[in-house]
Image (cartoon, rainbow, N blue to C red):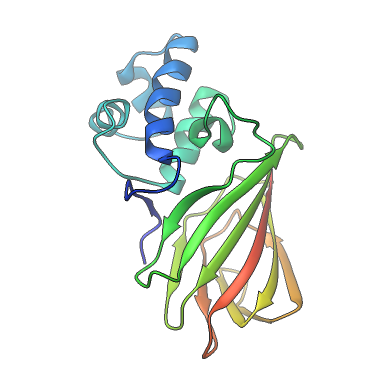
Length: 189
């Protein structure tokens, strides 16, 4: 399953915020689109299209752009007029309409701490790309069963249980049950 942020009538349209935030942050950093592309590993074409509001992007590419600009992920996706503590923005949709990820809020930590609400329909999954060293995830499953496949081993987390692990590795989530899996994800970096 894709980890792409898409403009699909999402409340608050995250991609509209990405478009304006990216351009504002890039100019504030004194970077050309070319320089940002080189620093982030995201193509110049993608940056041009993002700033124009004409493309979808993966969550990991947004992370790389934020890192290259010296800001956190939340600065890239949130409405600049709202509080970063309460974001409540749909960030990902799965193959089934019941599979969604919502960034609920964020607070400063070492760099950032993000609170997410997720649900995965039966048979759905999400494949992530590794985060930088020093990043961690804390997952609490409130309903269903979640399988987390990681380079250092897989774990199945049942309802009312949790997992904590380094996200600086390849990992994915999959619904491991026969009902919807709902979980809270906290990303700390």
